[in-house]
Image (cartoon, rainbow, N blue to C red; front, side, top):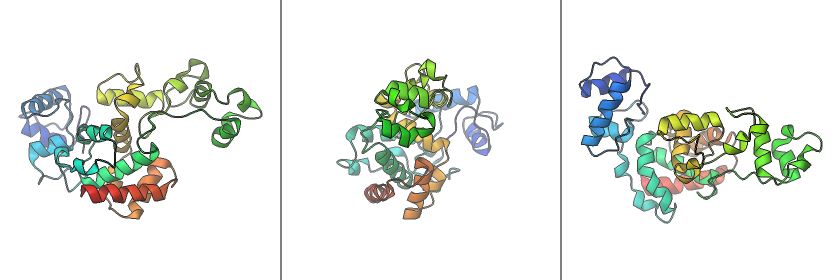
Amino acid sequence: MLLKKGSRGEEVKQLQTLLGLGADGNFGPMTETKVKEWQAKNGLTADGIVGGGTWVKMFGATTPTPTASVVIPPSSFKLDALKGHIPDAVIAQIPDTAAKFNITNPLRLAHFLSQCGHESGGFKAISENLNYSVDGLKRTFGKYFPGDLATSYARQPEKIASRVYGARMGNGDESTGEGYKFRGRGFIQLTGKANYAKFAQFIGEDTVANPDLIATKYPLASAAFFFDSNKLWSICDKGADEATVTAVTKRVNGGTNGLPDRIKHFNEYYNLLK
């Protein structure tokens, strides 16, 4: 569950009633202002976004959210158990990310972390590596490099990205260099100017003007934005079995690459967190 400016529905009406507003079901500027005031008074980050943590503090854990029957405030996650299994810098990002992006129980968190960890090579890769050889370009991006064209692009990441990502995902054409400027960043690589703009609007910081923020400040949050935007939490909620990990993997990866590793780490993280 995630309610923010622009949200509509019965949950918004419930929220507005609690805040003493007219319950029209439209999360507008006044609702956002009142949410920020309530969050500030109750020791929460006053961002005007009602994620799982704010919802639970407002209504209690017994009030179900639209997307999960078991809701745990992020502050109650057993994050100390993850030490030594996940980098401390990543663990430090979890509470705020969980509160903003619907990570409301250990099951969701374990699915999310296992995918992030695999996609980023153990939480190490935060920016897309585009240093392809001629053979690598033909194998990975063959349709963009017909004939012998790959030879003039090989081992030149900026040129490669500008061509491969140019004129799509909101980027200008190859000559603008926006394909490289908005290359994949974060633990699940956010790619393309349009996606950077959507994330910037949500997070309240201009990641279009400063795209490196995705890698340096928001590698985990941008991945959670992907999960939330693509409605992956409802898949995560189906269970702790291999079939669910497989279903999540297909949505993240487009296939099942690295599935055994994802399953291994899901089981590891879930057993630590539950």
